[in-house]
Image (tube, rainbow, N blue to C red):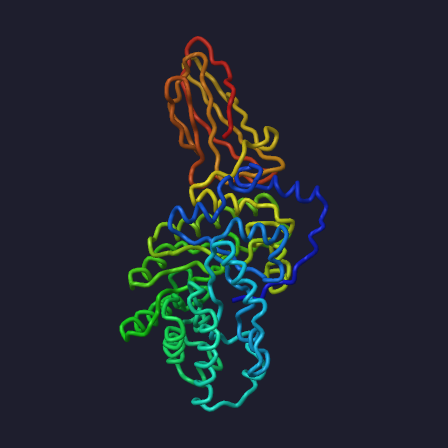
Length: 452
């Protein structure tokens, strides 16, 4: 639903791209998954989509869009202002281009969007329409656009953003002119134009349970009870770093329980610039949390990112000082978020961490005739961790008796310790420490600790 930002120049220094490769989840260099995201998602019966700009579907941008995703959403090309800038004069060039690209690459297309309060042509928004005229305009537009792609598009965002934050209907051209039933009318018209397409209502800030999502829930329930065609709800998920709603899975499930599908339709997770490894690690965790919430509900059909590269993101122009919201950087290097998506889908994307990036150091802080207290400090420089695990083998029969700030187990001589729920993050330039008590007899040599 958001306007895409103009593309930036891609001829950045190679060293910048190389450095970006090192800012990865768990301090590991990111690389493209051995198995593309689209194949990992398909294996789980899910869609992994991206919004795209048609003019960019060549070169590296086109290669990634075709290889990694099994669904495309036109970022702007199917909005009313794009396809009918003046009344009766249509421009389908970019929309046709995206649909053709998708068909050539075995991808679904999500039509976006038919009835919205924004990005409408001035002739429509500045007109003085009677309710009958406005109703006719909406019906004709839906019949024309949906009809053009009948049988070729899997899904349509029929109505976009109908609610205010408090759950009241947004005051728009459509609501003010036709009342709340403009939504049912639009859905009915879309079904008539293409009976095979799945029809959605799409909105933002409805990812968790709140007043706005509850208003959407009540609307969908009412539409179902009335027999109005409604197949799904789209949760846009334009999120802020560290603010994935804790009730997201619960919210997805309650919509699914109404008998409709749910899709995450416009996922991006923005941060205050500049980005750093700690922020990118948190972003990766956030992307994984969203993916996992969808994967946990059978009727969540999949996730679409709102642009896969920071060079094609709407965020910097809309939220000055913020950005880096997508899974790829501006040079098309995969970020930790990409690795997190792949891992949530069951793929492997990482290689062993560089030995000088994050280290674990074992020390004995006190010792007495039969026991000792020790600690391990995990430190990072030039990388960061979102979780950690360390292990070592005792060489003189020592036994761990107690641990704190970590979960530790011992099997024979081997001790394995992993982070507690509150201290898994180790930022670039930071450290965490955990401690333990143990017993010894004869000698207590310091073991070699392995991180990872």
